[in-house]
Image (cartoon, rainbow, N blue to C red):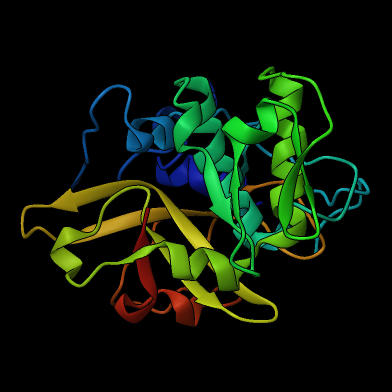
Length: 250
């Protein structure tokens, strides 16, 4: 029903399969242009599953958040309850860095403070008792990257990710790739995957998330639209986090 509504409103194109092309900016707004090869460009071009696809948990069940689905990102979620909210943000960041072959930049901290670097993992080092131990073989292939991300998901979370990110202090500086995050147990976070702006420089944005239990990364919709702003209630769970005091950036 919501997909039909988006079609009628002209907010969605059924013939295209990424964030930028599937959803149109509302009347009076223009899409924020991104530079090719940047993280923002990667997020705008996230591949999407066919329109109308349900958000599923890692067990293949319809997720509790399915009612808030505008689209489902076409990316694996694994077979374990690992890729939850902060994990989805780290997965997207890691995927971007991996596919641009910036392996040395793939690094996330665990809640314990341990720095988990993909370059060391790819050289065969494995995590044991808060230290690296050389027990494996060198492998920087994609499956090795996915195994590394599972390790990160196991020991990192909103608490550690929030500490790693930099605070954004001005709403005028809002950018694609920024994250609304509140660390805790469980805490939660959203990542901005697209943005549009009007003549008065008011910005609206699209959000992606995962949830608990682990589920597909979904593009969200609330109050009948996939576009959110800082000055309107979001109409989604944890919508109170869409506030400048929670805004961070890699």
